[in-house]
Image (cartoon, rainbow, N blue to C red; front, side, top):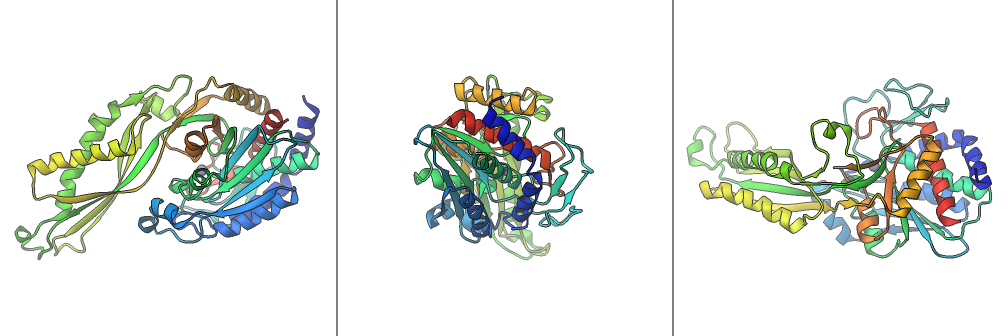
Length: 442
Ligand SMILES: [Zn+2]
């Protein structure tokens, strides 16, 4: 093994205690979104760490326009949309490698937690399973401990190891902590790319599982559908127009549409595996989907509701545009209206994010597969997901080859109560990152 890699690896192995302390600090800052408060606080913590390594660090707050297209009003977003960019200069500018992790977390459920979701508890064992990398480092608990603050920790200690062991880079390294990933990343990595703040030649998106190399994800558009009726006394519904009944007709049509039309819209992704759960029911291609996610309406049984509102998420396959998807959704509702002209409705886009597919035979991707395999000591598959990450901005806006990998394992309960992460998986993640940096930038 390369001497520099060996010394960074042993630095990482001997600093696991520090990684626990740093991760605990990150978890204790509540950055669940919505609302997405405290991004400024977590950026400050990361800034002081990156500055210690001699990075030039800058904070970038997304403007009102970006907040608007994030669906800020509907999602009730609050607080500054802060993002952090740390640059670790090499002798020359290129190649530039951009590594991204998100600073926000999924929302914290009120029920189901057996540990404090913002406590950062450190235990030796884990009742939900054991990491295959477990060497006694234990587990850290809390919302975001794995997704994605465990990744932030891995990225931070990878850089610390390179810095402390004196590895010299030839190209430049850009690390970002970007906000709002869980709601589409528009004011986060989207903002950093669209404003030209981040530009690079290669990318890594730190998110998801440590046991796979993510290359593809579907796009998605979130719509708000409203039906309007006429309020009346509930014992004389014949004199009112029931907005919930109108929405029910629309929902029957939407259900038929996704099961009979969208599920047949499939795009093959050669060389890339979809998750086991999907393959086991025969879905091995990117497949269009639709989910009726929420429904709200009415005030009481004795009143005819005059408004019904619901959120629909449309999973998009490559080749579908937001405009087409919206037009098709409206035409499904128009067909319902043709048989019930009394339906009054409107459709608004809450927010949208594009999908991506990276070619598995790209030389950078092949190199990454070899490096990840060497570090983990096992063959790691290329995977695709129906759920997206911030990687769409690196691929579509940044036009760079990129892959995603995180520190998650089957027991990690990502987005669920009792989220946790293995400290040894974080160390493995840090080694993957350090090894990638050394191979690409020196
Ligand atoms: Zn994530």
